[in-house]
Image (tube, rainbow, N blue to C red; front, side, top):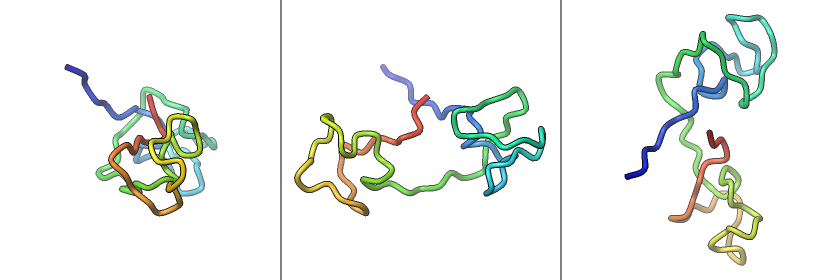
Length: 82
C-alpha cells in the first residue's frame, strides 16, 4: 500500500510570509527548500485545477485536448511533489 505524505518544504510551512520570506531564518526561500524548523501550516491552499497539476501540458496529461485553466479531472496531481 502506498503512503501519501506532504513534503515538509517551505511551501507548506507556517513560518513563510506571502512574499516567500522565512520568518525564522530571515531569508527568501522557495517551495523546494526545507529545514529543521519546519512547522506545518494549519491548512493548505486547496487550489486544484489544470494550472496546479504536474501533468498539465505534458505527455502524461489524461485530457490534453480538453485541459484548461480552472478545469479539474480525476487525474489531477499536485505540482509540489516530494
